[in-house]
Image 1 (spheres, rainbow over the protein chains, first blue to last red):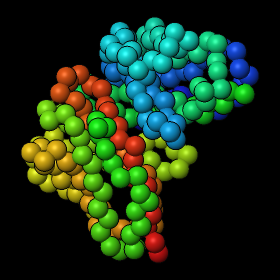
Image 2 (image 1 turned 90 degrees about the horizontal axis):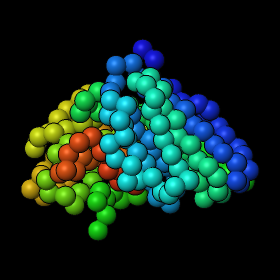
Image 3 (image 1 turned 45 degrees about the vertical axis):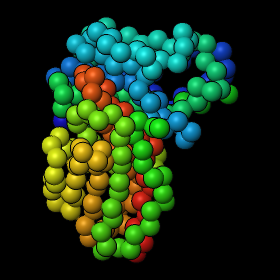
Length: 112
Length: 112
């Protein structure tokens, strides 16, 4: 079975540019989560969706970050404008109901 | 006080010995508890979850939960070099829904 699929795997861009990260959850899963991981802060939940509806976005750092889930098989996390402090690994995870979450391989983002 | 606390390590254990990883949490009503393993440069991988007080065994892994003392632990028997990784403890807090709160992880090294 296909797991959570994220793209791109790596992204290097200059400060001020728009960055879009993509995620395809496991088929049949109804919850989707976006995380950010850094050495300093560890793994932080940014936002999560249930049945395509954003439930909790309290972890979104600021207005430069936005996330959408237009359908059950696709979500995006957008940063505009990007800043060097946004450099991190961004993970997407999905789950079914209250079952454990399964993570994608992540996107390693570097903002120069 | 951090919501989920782990000793960052590194924890060094000889091959074949038992590795013991500990995690404490602050919210007494926390409901569900998870252990994820993360190899360097990879995504978190679920290895155990536990919901009730006591022990839960799966192969070489045993999760132990003590809600009265607010700690959860992971024991790895017959440690192998391939067990060398960072182990992340995660909990679902009393307000429920599906949000995972992660500890910062314990880095485990198995010495051949």
